[in-house]
Image 1: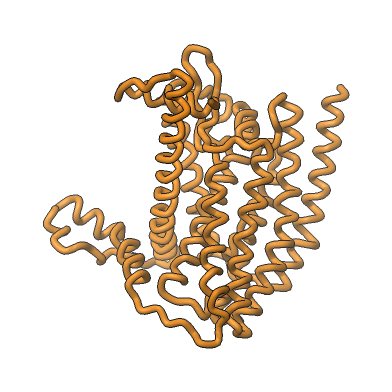
Image 2 (image 1 turned 60 degrees about the vertical axis):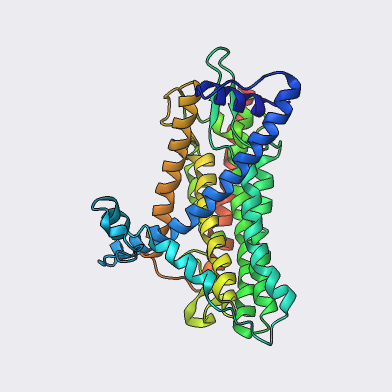
Length: 389
């Protein structure tokens, strides 16, 4: 029986839909059912969010270039509904569904020169690690109105939480590397080699930029400093972006490189690698790579929010509301911050030019990583001095 299961049952009972039993045997069964429902709901919501992240990309691109964007695709007879039909059509909300159906229903040619079993495995490896990290994400917290105890609303509160997330999320690079390797074509292979070098390099920047946050969390709280919940909880007064702004800048830059987004998308550069690692892919398998890319954008925005923007805390120094409505408000606040970050990521893509591959590696090894190391040493000295004082 864990705290998350009891918090779920208390939340359900707080809505007034009915009363779930709280005896130990009933809690074990009920919590397993609720966890399964929440896990499926999170995966479905995230996959649906990937579809509409594409719409966000196209709308922001149209806005940056003075165009309209998707505004024609609709369902038969949908325009018969004067308000709803026009909003769904002219705002482009039907376009992601049409794109997904088009990718799913097209004929899928498989080149004869590929290594087939690795060719089929690569899209799954690119998508699966991002889905696994969802179980470690605390989306909000629940404060018991009677006792004041705060519980993280997350499926698995592992002790080395962020270490697990960083390690597993980086495994998605194996799928893209395998896609280029199995294609048996020189341009995808070149792109896969770029991915391997880029991920290894910028992973060092990501970890080094996070360690000052771990030091501050360990200095300000007695809880586990490697847990996402502890990192967010100690940001109730000061957000980490105020305390460690250099780490936030380094992490955001390295996060863009990990995602392969402009200006760091040299593995997919059309000017010198045709289409990158997925040159030989089409239809549904290409769609899996596409979904994996936008899934990493969503997860990266959520992780940045948890690390630097206070997570589900609305504003600095503003106490969180207890009870069920406080949890709902915290969830909406987290999603709003993540949406703003996604908008910024897309905006950067359509604003900055693509770097050359040597410039990408130069930025990491000669600029970001040395600054991150100096920043870490500085905060190590500061935290040590505060503890001794």
